[in-house]
Image (cartoon, rainbow, N blue to C red):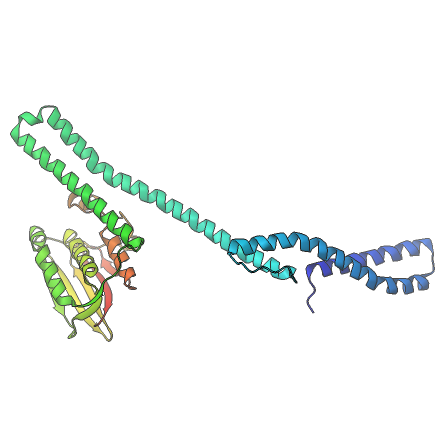
Length: 336
């Protein structure tokens, strides 16, 4: 039988008391036999009294702690009857561990919030300073020169477009995270969707001299997902491949049959990504090549949006890449 904490203390106290009593009587040269008999009779009474007193002492204090634990857990049912100290100790430890984990998560979220605000501030500060510089140039006499006038107004317009793109992408991520955008699951042809995307991206790919092509290895082309969201996923991936592609290169989309799913791969033979950057690739505002990304108008949010959309579908985005050889992004969708 497992003894609770007060019982163990009671036994220890009684044992110490008896030892002291024996020692005292031994020193006083009293009769051991009579004391031995008296001790045997008194021991159970002392044990019961000590246990009762200690139980009550601990009960009153632990009862308050126990009620607090139940209150913080949101448990409405609390009984004063038969509070087991060992059980309280275990639950208190579990509660403390849970609170410690919550505190760690809060600190992590706070660090993430600070980093996010810092990133947003940095990303918006660049185009704002650019616009300020262009306007100042015009104020200082640039308005009189038609050529300079037009040049700096066009640059200011590009900076405004960049700010608008950043804000729009942030809004998309915010809606995805807060689940304000409900998925509209429907059946659609994934190959037809890719053809539409290629039509939309034709001008951009021509400017970068990158060829767009697809290769369907699946007889079944219908999938079940949110068509608009998957369109955004593919557009972001294709756009990313074009931006970081090589002149004369290509972007290839493969469709591979996987029993009840279709594997979709977006591959390019561009500049590739170093292995050390792969783990951070889907973080907000993370860029492998910051200078190149800003030159071609990237917000640093495209792949983060891809990740959020696919997670909303219960899927994940995978990437494999080799520096100076190219990259492949892949995900799966269920067949219709």
